[in-house]
Every structure is written in C-alpha cells, then in structure tokens.
Image (cartoon, rainbow, N blue to C red; front, side):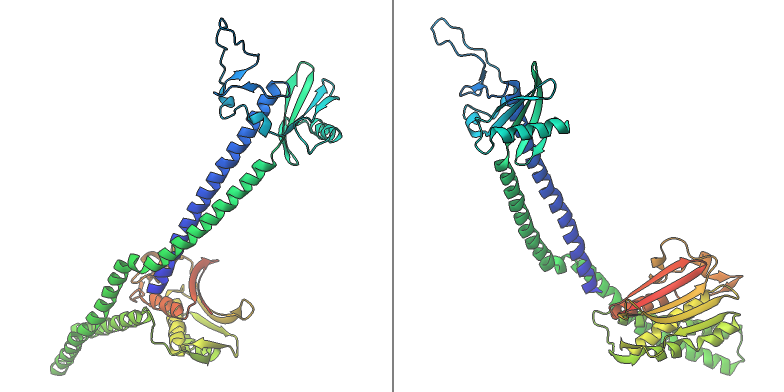
Length: 430
C-alpha cells in the first residue's frame, strides 16, 4: 500500500508539473510569436502608409517626411513619435527585405518594386500580387513572405516582407524553450521521486500505527473473550442455558469473527503480504469455493448459478483466491433480492491475458452514490443492502475490503457496477 501511495503521489505531482510546463512554454512561445508578427505588421503598415518605402528616422527615432532646414533661423523640425514607430531606427529600412506590388482600382497590376529584395524577380512579384488579389485577403503569409494590403488614391498597394529570419528565430526559440523545459521537468521529477518518501512519511507512520493497533488490539481482546466464553459455559453447566447466555455466546462468536477478519485485512495490506505464489487450476478453485453456497442460497429461496470456464490456470495464491470467491459469493447471496438469482462466472478476457471473476446478483434497489465506497472498511449501505422485509443481514462491512486487498496483492483490479437491476463485482486477475 505504501508503494502504491508513493507512486500515486509521484504521478500526480509529475502530471501537475507537466501541465504547468506546457502552460508556461506555450505561453512564452505564444507571446513571442504574437510580438514577432505584430512587429512585422507594424513594418508593413509603415511601408504602406509611405507608398511603398520607409520614412526617414533621426537618431532619436523621430520621423521626418521632409528634408530638414539646417539654417540658423530655421525652426526645430516637428517631431512625430507614434507608438508603431518605436523600436525602429534609421537602419531598419536597410535590414528589412521587401517588395511592393501596385494595382489599379480594377485589380490590374500596374507596377512592382523589387529593389529592396534579391530573391524575387519582377515576374515572380506579379505572380505573388495576383495570388493575393484573387484570394481577396488583406493580410497573411505567402511562402516565405508576410503580406498586407492597403488602399491608395490610385488603387491598391500590396507589400511583401521576407520573414525567413523571423521564422527561424521563432523555431529556435521554440526548440530551446522545449529543451530547457524538458530538462527541467526531468530534473524536478527526479527530485520528486527522491523526496516522495519524506513527503508521505506522516501518512506512512499513521498507517503503520493503525495497523499495529489493530494487530495488538486483536490479540489483547482474544483473552477476555476466551474468559467470557468459559464463564458462560460454566454458567450453563450450573444452570440451564437461557436467552442471556445464548446471547452472550452469539456476541462472542460475532466478535471472534470480526477480529479474524480485521487481522486478515491487516495481513493483506502489508507491503509484502505473505502469499504463496504458484500456478494452479483456478477453474477448480473457483468452483470448489462457490459450490457450498448453493445450499445456502436455496434455503433463502434464491438461485445460485456457477458458470466457470474449464481448464484455466492462474499464477497466484490459491488460498487467497478461494477466500476472494467465498467473500464475493457470500456477499451476493446475502444481498440478492428475495427469489433472486446469483451468478458466479470465470472467463478469460483481453485475448487470454486476463482471467476475470464476475459475481452478480439481482438487486432492484442498488446502492446510491459512489459504489467504490462499498470497498471501504465498515461501510454498509443500510438503505438498500442491510434489510429485506425486516431481515437483518448482519456482517461487519469489512469483507469487501478484504476482497479488494486480495486482488491488489495480486497486482490486479476489482470493480463494482449496478446496471439492469444487477449488482456486478468483477475481479480482473492479471
């Protein structure tokens, strides 16, 4: 159980960390792509607004549309610093590779300017322009170029800007961030695995104390129960048995049964339960364990059917598997409807890789809510499973916990479901 708790802690922590890393890496790459595209669009807008060319920038990033007058009487030039021009300087126009396509109001290309790019000829520029005009889009990407269209007095202007450098930068940033993220993820996962024992230590100590208490209390209670039982027998020898002595003996039997099951559960939940693993004929084991309940079911007016595939072999503890069959079958007989039916099945699944034990019983009013609680210690759904026409079912609410511990000790799974008026317990034995 401790190993299972540790694995669950590590898995949950690793999944949470993975989600956070995906969010962080995706976020920073998303911001990087958005900012890069925004910068490219700002450059395209600047070129469009200036009819296919870059404006002049002074060293402070101020735009000048007209030559400056350097005479002594000249007034200082008017400064314009729109936000979209921030970050660009007089070298930007020499670093940006672009070409421009002009079209008239009818969509016919009238002129191209490829003087700022070496990879595209005039004929290729015309093809690019026609493709954009035919698509009707105002912005987007065409091959290695990001484009944007604008309207002028004479028609349309389409600016294509080479974005290969930006694409390479984005890809490198993505690869580097993913590599760093993966390395960090592996490192943190290793730290989680190393320190997981320390993290769950309080839970482990609490569980060990609880298990030790059950074991010690079980052995301590046996002595007074034996004394009470002996005294009761003496009383019956001195005087005739009466309802009080009979009631005492019944309660002693009940407490002895509860102690036996508690100690069995504590043993099954040990880190390495003392099981004798060997190959055995599970078909015969299941049939032998379920058959004695046929008579019990008939005395209660119920019908037990055993449907076991012949000749199946399984590697496990035969005694524990027989106990599992007995617990599930007794539970089904106890809680089946009056005149109901109980079925015990054994078959293979997943291409013979698993051996499934399925025990079902009719149940008109199945338990409500989370059915996995049926495997909790001392849990009993009194509204639908404890009484039937005033008949008290008894039990300690611990049998299914033992069944679950047996299945888990064989590294397998057990589940419960209610459908079509049936309660079905399935142990998938691997």
